[in-house]
Length: 168
Image: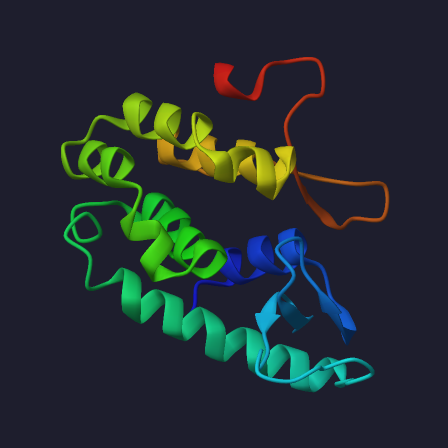
């Protein structure tokens, strides 16, 4: 079963696009970052919100199953496990395997080193500051930030804008 917090984090980071588009690396993508068949043009392809939700569930289940096979995964708490699942979702398993220093630091419980290795990667600059900092903090602290409600009573996850996110 997919942790609802993980699902929400990924959906928010990816955003929902119901029409096929090429991602930053030129791959055909749809829904919440779902990679499509790359062997043909997907221009004009559309899906419904329900189909996007199904694809997200399938993609997260695949990423979670892959993450659970990794030696660094079993010794992590829930928050760090969710961070690794999201990294596998975002990068793909083969690219995550290339993060050898990050993975070793996770296995050894060296949280600050693991977080710093993410920060020193090309991924950090490609993925966007919000997602990168959030995952950095999950790895560093092993905790979700405190949640607050906005003026409409919706749950808001965030950090004060005037502080360095790594200072938590």
